[in-house]
Image: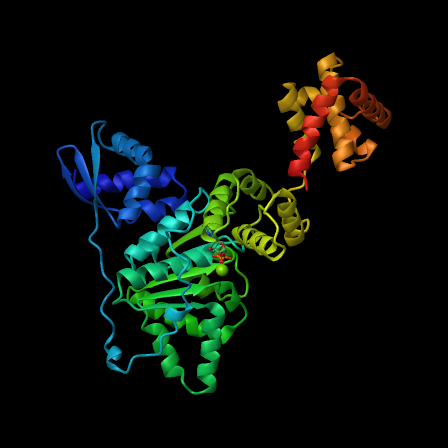
Length: 445
Ligand code: ADP
Ligand code: MG
């Protein structure tokens, strides 16, 4: 069998077993270049694809090859030679166009100080790959989408900064969609559309931030459509950021959206706890603030919405402490968080949280706590939970009853009174309740 046939069969099998986008992104662009004894040699478009396939699809592809071809077959990869973007068009002999780029890049936004976590790892890797070899077909355009403060602008500028430092011969143009719109309007008003066109269409790498703001601007979209096509056809790299997946954007022309989806689209999700801690440590260091670990953890527990809030918490902390000449301590931290975020960023303690903590401490399961058993240690853990819920959350008796296995309010009231008196008389219960109170005084604000 010809190696191309062999690869086609493997591809067909992968296509059946993988989600469409995964197949299209990773396996469709691979070509086979030879079959040597039992070794199938495949050419992947770039180093990044290779690494991604090796770390995520190694088994899948090997199994497919073994099933389709031969149990002994092995796979070998080679990375396609890097295609540098074609040289600038002849119009470059005109006087250089105004560059809307360099001054607009934030130099602090680099790959090095972009903290990686599971939620942004893929986006970061894709951006790096684009920065290292701009113009690869599978990644063009690259669209990064996600909520506010997730690091989209950071990554976009990191690409620009990287290219400017490593490949100064390439022309990087970076603008927000609003800037693009403004430039376009000004150009029309001043009859300088040629210059406008030139400044954007001479880009080797075009970075446009927040494309959702093209919404409803028909003429600008028209203009952007042409810019996009011209650059794309010339193999120039385009990177876009958006607040949501292009397929769900409203007020943008369908033909634009379908162009946006022709390359690679990747999201950034809010960072998990560990990533938040890592980001905070980095930001504290950048800002020269010394924060003990428990305070970092405290911030990471409460400020969960986005990275920008994490960062500004640190900056405010610093500002407060220097203005009021006060040490950074937990009360100050609480004050800052409370003022900055109000209720929205705070993770409210729930009945379930309290039950979980009591379960951890007493080694009685959560199910037992809300269950029907009247055995002493279980009933006691239940009553302690009820008592703490009432004290910390102020939940109504009736409401608590439903949380605790549908008990009626008199049972709940009895539990509260019982623990209240035991806290006075029984040192063991007192110790238990006091420990838990402390914990929630610490997490609750
Ligand atoms: P977006 O454009 O998604 O709204 P930004 O890129 O403006 O978000 O990020 C907000 C702030 O958070 C910036 O100061 C940025 O440097 C920082 N930031 C976001 N994600 C990270 C990260 N993973 N590591 C370090 N800093 C980050
Ligand atoms: Mg942004």
